[in-house]
Amino acid sequence: MKGKVLKFDTDTRAGLIEDHRGAEFPFSEDQVASSQDIRAGDEVNFRPKGSKKGPFASQIVLVQSGRNSAATG
Image (cartoon, rainbow, N blue to C red; front, side, top):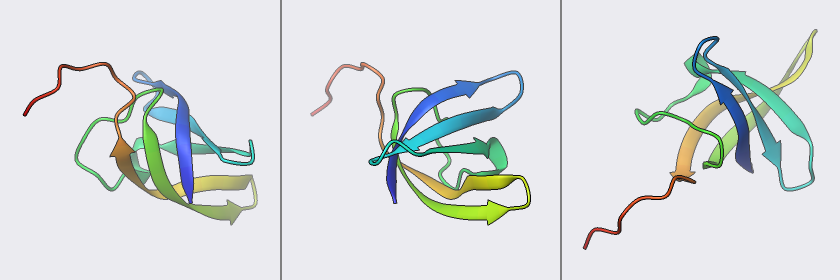
């Protein structure tokens, strides 16, 4: 499922992803499969999972960084 990182706290190493319908999925850094740092604004693919505490995001992979950076070519 595609989503966008709404927030990521570098102190707690936890964040929140919003999918295309507006549903929110909390996650922790250990659910990030890519080697790049995840930040607010990043586009990601993830697998929604459920637990007794509710839904959460797992198997998170960075698709496109939401950060402004110089284009390399």
